[in-house]
Length: 420
Image (cartoon, rainbow, N blue to C red; front, top):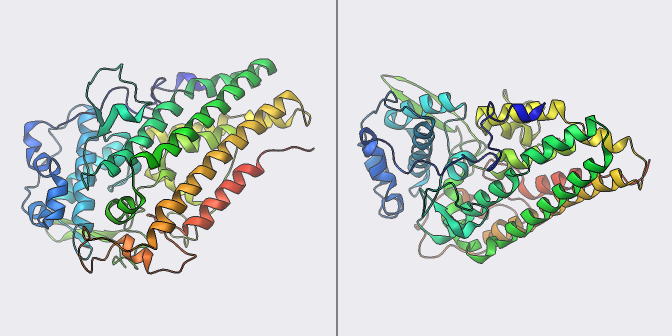
């Protein structure tokens, strides 16, 4: 039974993959050297002092981290410092100092997540609210804000809190998915249909929330100011990191590493929807296989960037889910099949909305010149993408963006079956 495993997988029956409470706002006093920089990170980036300040940091021990909330806050802080250090200059920095490397390797190992700025770092564990009360409605993006920011702009904040709101809204269907699986096992078709219809309504509501992105987030600000800091170190030769980034541990130790950047593909929620509906994606995003992702789809690879408990939940859900099989056992035009097809098409429509936003926020924005807020001659993901062909634009993980998203959308739509 899936519903007995929520706590083991650190999934809230109320907030889904978000924490049950507002994330910790500051680490204990020992970690003030980190907190002092991230508290005014946009200024350090703008005035060009970010690398100098990070280079002056002492190597702090993680032994003073106690509660899980502290480990998560440490991860978020270090991930932001790391990406600000790499991308916060005219050219990217391909060597990280031991003051960042040593603690983030230990913190990420504890959390079972890569040592870089993942979706969990910038969204799941990086929000706050005026009140720390559990009664804060996180499904409304107007009620929440970001804890740490690269740019200090409202545009960046809105971009992230829209995702937090989606997670909060969608996370509330965790119990619904469990109940639908039980209904299929019990051959309770009327309950199955009711639950699938409710699931479809949630997906439609998520689409409406996603469409609110344009209310407070400018495509130009997103593309030229924020997006470069979300870039990873994998497939980033064009942006100035041909070998990835060297994680210097000090004392002559260290290694080159390559990681994808933060991506919505790392959202456990969206992948849970696929697993629930029995949709499997094979799109690679145009990336060449390597030792860790040979013959693996891009979305499957993105699971490696999720917190370990969430990743294991998706694996368990994929093994146990019977929704598609149950629907396909019913005849075409049956209420059960209709309910399943409607859910699939709602998920496809959600991906259509995402595709339109990508076209506006990346494709069209890439064709417009950066303004005076950009450093002249700065090389980052934005400028590297802008120099590409009109038909090819890379995602933060190096994917061939539009073809990948279209293939993923089409695979979703194809899961609906209207004939035997």
